[in-house]
Amino acid sequence: MIRFEILTLFPDFFKGPLSESILNRACEKRLIDIRIINIRDFTADKHHVADDYPYGGGAGMVMKPEPIAKAICSLKEESPQPRVIFLTPQGKPFTQQRARELAQLERIVLLCGHYEGIDERVRMRHVDEEISIGDYVLTGGEAPALIVLDAVARMVPGVLGNEDSFRNDSFYEGILDYPHYTRPEEFEGDRVPETLLSGHHKKIEEWRRREALARTLRVRPDLLEHAPLSEEDHRILNELRKLG
View 1: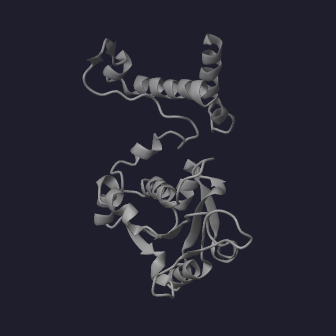
View 2: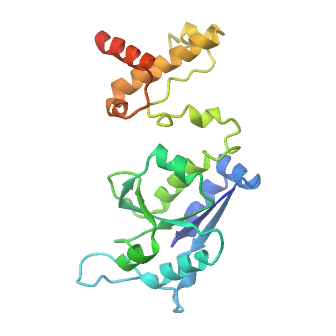
View 3: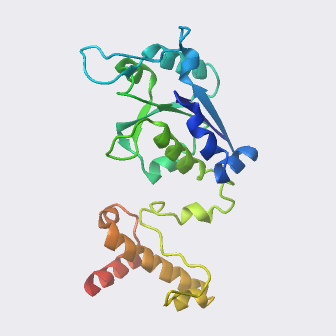
């Protein structure tokens, strides 16, 4: 079981998403444990002030170091030691590979920044890793924390019920996912590919691999540079390139 501990100024942000669907069921089954921790609970004043003006001037406020440091230190008093991740646009890009690696841990602390960010001394002394979900800026780290939580949790055995569900995901093997179809067989004049109706498992598998490679070549050709491709994959890609 992985324990996720989310440090935030806005704990109510997570009430809806964590009370629904797969994540909620995973918690009920004790496959994952999610704890939402209010950083304001670690402030020392009666107004629970967790931010202040930046030294040197400038727009916006900065999250104070003391409450964050106290919150993290309180979590590190428990075993096993958690990995503290700060969600920030300045972090390393979050990938499927990193999600797979994080799913091997027992405890993950997700620190949500806000305003203009957190005091640099917290980053230096108390953060183990910084993760970005993309080259853009949001109002806070709560949405990125939820994304990381979801991506990692679904890799935990039993969370999705069928492990093949995530093994076939886009990026899991370095390429995009193949197209999916369900009933009805015909919709707005388009039919489900005959191969998928054939019941021939080997042909279906081959069709799906070819379509996944074709989609990756068309939409994200950059992924093919590092994907673990077989000789057959390279043959298919060469054929697809010739077809234009």
